[in-house]
Structure formats: structure tokens, C-alpha cells
Length: 139
Image 1 (spheres, one colour):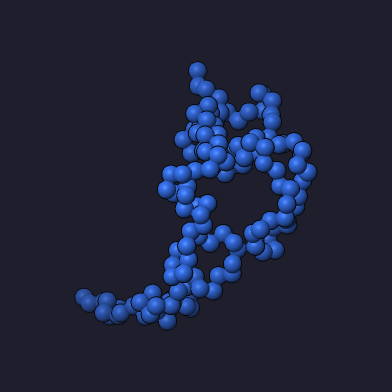
Image 2: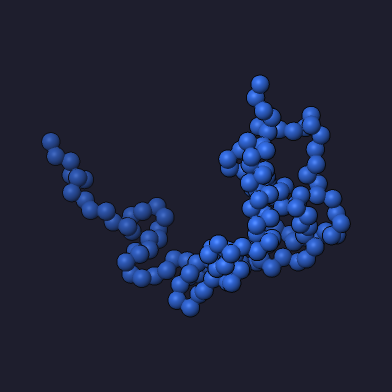
């Protein structure tokens, strides 16, 4: 028995998405993305900022060193290898960072920008009883 459909070649026009971009044509699918001020892709005419380049070369600023040390300490003290983004934000707030200026990012209308005073509390303190069980030592 032969299957009549066995010799059919794949036809992209029959896909449910309706649009297929062949990467071999040279069309960049990312070309239409709007600027968010977060793009770090390199390419013709794009260079790393001095701030990023020096850090990648191992010459970190005092601020970068303090942040890395704080994250490392958090991981060691709480016995976690991979902190969540909420954990990272907690460390940043405990370092004293507050949202005191308008954002330099273009995140669209999905999120509303806000500001707080420079002396605002971190908002991350909790009682020992409220601490998540994943931070408690076993035994």
C-alpha cells in the first residue's frame, strides 16, 4: 500500500500562520521592532558603550562590583544558585536604589511609569514568620 500523501513536499503557503520568512533571503525579521533603549545587538556601526565594554574586559566600576558582591552574598546566605527577578529587585532596593526619575526605556503602553522619593523605604523587609520556606535551612 502506498500513501498518496507521502510524496508531497512541504508548502509554506499551507501553514496555519500564513506568513513564512525565508532567512536565506536576507530579510531581517527584527528590523521592524521599535526602539526600547534596551537593544544590545551588535552589528555594522553599533558599538558597546564604554560602561559595558569596560565591564566585559574585567574593569568594573565600584557600582558594578558592589552589585555583583551583593548578588553573590544573597545567593550564599539564602542557599540559592539562581535568584529570581524578584530576588534581584530585592537586592537592588536593599542597596538603596529607588525609582526617582522618569524611565529612559520605551516600554509602550503596557506599563505606567512612576516615581518615588529618594528616601522611600525599600518595601522588602519582612518578619521571620513571613519568610518563604525556600529560604529556610532544612533541618
